[in-house]
Image 1 (cartoon, rainbow, N blue to C red):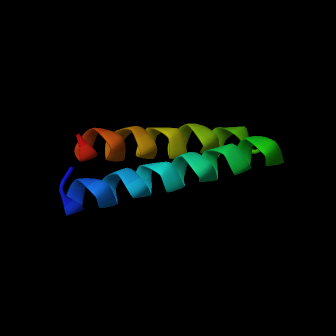
Image 2 (cartoon, helix red, strand yellow):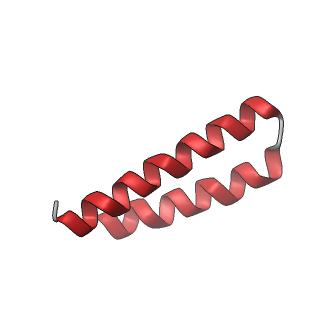
Image 3 (cartoon, rainbow, N blue to C red):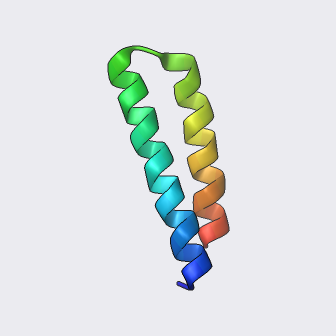
Length: 46
């Protein structure tokens, strides 16, 4: 991976972590949003 793709993947991992925290907090609607962001960023990394 290049430096840019490493950064996109790091951001995707961060968004997944945020989604996991929101699940624990019981805040489900924003979980979908952060999963969507993570998926887009992971695809850009590829």
